[in-house]
Image (cartoon, rainbow, N blue to C red; front, side, top):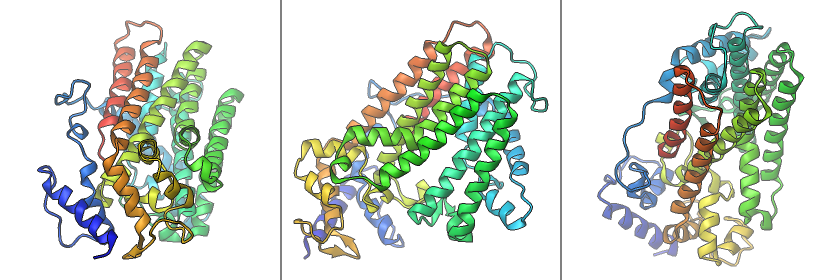
Length: 408
């Protein structure tokens, strides 16, 4: 039997020994069978994550607090992406269609932040640009358009064929129209930003887009040494995942006329929330299935992208560094690169070392630390007795825990 098949058989035995994992369905595609066999990465804490190890209480849903307002944001976004050419309208609105919107995390976070720091909660309905809430909502819409634009461009660069459990835009309409749709969304976003008539807010949003591009370039031009650096990984993670929400949180504070201290706290909340979210995403890339994630699992490692679980595993097993530096499918590698069903054996070696390490657990602890720092930023906001402000602050803190416990 090939070494890789022995390893895969061992992974499956480990998985079948776990009482929480069901029998592997026979009709799974190959990659999902590999994922199923890797469910040993799950620990009991995945669904019962709490400091004391006991089953955590079910948290109130932060999304429910302002779901009606977020729904209105979604409706407006559909009208904001209408173009002269019908094909462009359809492409730009692909992820704004009913059933394809996702959870709208960015608008939810930003509207909760606006409520958490606002001193004027009147006029929650968009319509007049001089009303504080209307301007906050506009930032939420702008941020969501930038976010969707970045997802579209990422899928083109990664040649991804799925997103949110459906065909990616580039798979549906082709790369050229997908790129143009992403560009059009950026145009619409900054047209709306200019209408806010606040140069600092425009500058913050422009910085976020610059960070998104920088993060993508960091990933594309990474050197072997940088691939093995946790500092490099965390900086890239900030640029690609946390920069947009952190700068947008600060933009909301700026539009609220808040002090520089409150602006900094809003920014820190977004920064740490975004990093925590990505760290859990990195775990799910190993522990989730394509069906649950709505995209290909093992997508990062399959593209040679090294994330926190592998970096932590490397600290325990230095021999893993050679595999990481040379790439998982580099034929010049000194490791066995026998392929199993077109999958390099080095890929299975990485999983083997990850299985033996504390990589998943340490990544979860790092995510929890960033979630804690996000909650601390909310606790450090100026005191308030306004019930709307207090409930919004609690929702922002609950959101950090909800992200830690997510399974997709």
